[in-house]
Length: 417
Image 1 (cartoon, rainbow, N blue to C red):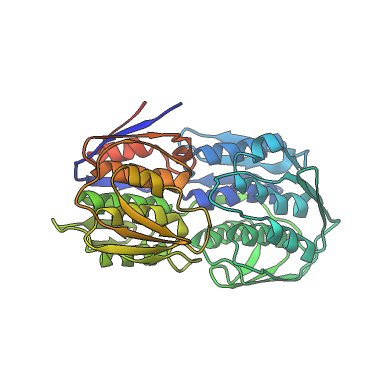
Image 2 (tube, rainbow, N blue to C red):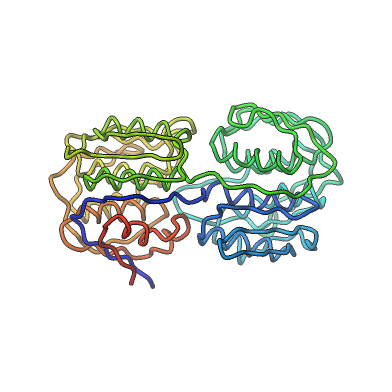
């Protein structure tokens, strides 16, 4: 099994390009199933979750072509199956996002109940409720969500809780539904906006994406088209935290600072000098020690849960104490024990962690438990004395494109075994 070894103590300097967003590209690839012509998706990150999604689409019969730049061309005209098998879906939660497109385009979908990171229970009830509101018959049996509908009908869908995945799934289904669909209490993440922009380029009629109320006027068909995936705000945030923790100066290119307000504000609170210019973000610590910051995770536009572990790592070496409240996932403190192995001073009380900054961390063998926890351990390794060896890094490859090469280009001493 592959591992990453990090030797700490090097301030990061230089320029690095931000990849396309993992959390945006997965639903966009699934949206290709809605069309009656090919969809070309550009700025696709080369990630394990993307490869899994492509395998799911191919299993359904879609024609897939990848060029040398990893742009993905999806031809939905050859889709012959509406069954997404357990063998593929079990490795990645986002596979459930084929449910809405298959149901809307082919009148039937059978999708295995999904797997993914063990960061907490993420039920699919809001996905099912949304499809039922649009007139589908849905049952869960034999570990599969089985849905049928001759043609979906527009409806008012009120989500019981803000769910990014359910918003995406129902939004995609509604594009081909008869009449108007209104999504209330919809997720507002930038990735929802990116999906809506892709669907609109294919001929969908959508208003309100990025707000809590999205209105969709159903159309008879969606054509193909082209779309370039939005920059990954979580990857960007992770590299900015790496620069801040190591006391370096790093410029991100192909970034989208307008999608990252909460993260950038907290980095400024921690003492970082930030400059945004178009799609470039420069962070400079200017020789100062970080100040600990308090964060509370919540749906966009508040602080993203996907940046919580990285900021915890940052607080571990900051001056003072930071209080971290995790309100999204109940199991998202699994990196705490591993950070403690490196010498971090963290106390957990329920969904709250109190982090007291220490002068230095010490390298040790640690084990990744989920995607963002993996990133936090790499960040801690960048500042720890000696070597930190991170096991089970397959989590990391699900969401970060060639992270060791990007960090190496900034001067980090990091290698994969």
